[in-house]
Length: 363
Image 1 (spheres, rainbow, N blue to C red):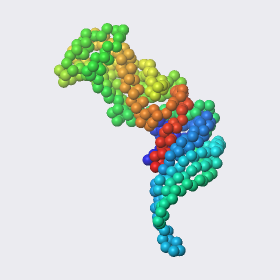
Image 2 (image 1 turned 120 degrees about the vertical axis):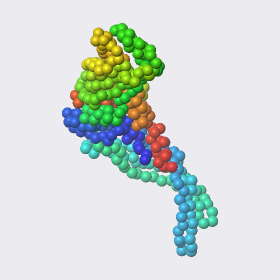
Image 3 (image 1 turned 180 degrees about the horizontal axis):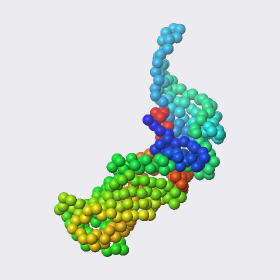
């Protein structure tokens, strides 16, 4: 089913239905809120006229055939190659209707209809000139007070269950080996890499397997979105049946998001981290202490950035599936609040999308 470009923009950030809610204190208890503002309504009104005129420049309609009885017999007729040309809109106005939405009124519309009519024994060229006047409601359930074009409120009540679902669905599992593993351990750390770890990494076929051990929990404050998770990490070697190393890290990360050049950017800072070594092959207590200190730094400077490097393109791709990359997003801002996140932005109206949509609808 075809979807309008306006709906596409709404779904680009959160693939759910949106509503408006007051007061703002209630946003933390709501899944998501979307607000389209007065500046956006002005642009929609201006561009709607341009889009309709452009879409109908070469609109075509299917042929119509039939027959009708008249006093002296039956006449067969057919309308073929019907087209609309030179459509123009003389006037377009919009009105903000409190608790209702935006009303857009289009009037003084003129167009030339061209095509061929066949009847009985011949054909002739038909040119019909007509005018229509028809008001229409364009967007429903919108309240307009802010000066940015589009606002989203996304609450912890929506995001936290989504993270839980992703955990149970096995989304937070990653295997790292080969060149990717070698490049990962090229990261410079202040602590020297333990010799035993060097030995494992230089052995045949090392692979690092990381996964979420428990359901991650997230909450939002004005500092950013905090995520607490327990991750389990195994170092596997081809020469051994059992992991050479297994440890768990309890880590809390504060994440702030931005969007630029059609890509999601995440900045993460470790707020708390703790390492628990559960299994380690042939290691003394002193070596374990040195290894724990090294791993704690590695989690912060290697592990967390690596996780972010996976999340950024995957979340960007998820938003692009909803069509976000088709729009010109102007000066987007992500503002964390207590219990929810505000996303505010302006956007360039996707005229080419609406033109193509109307053409496909009319053909």
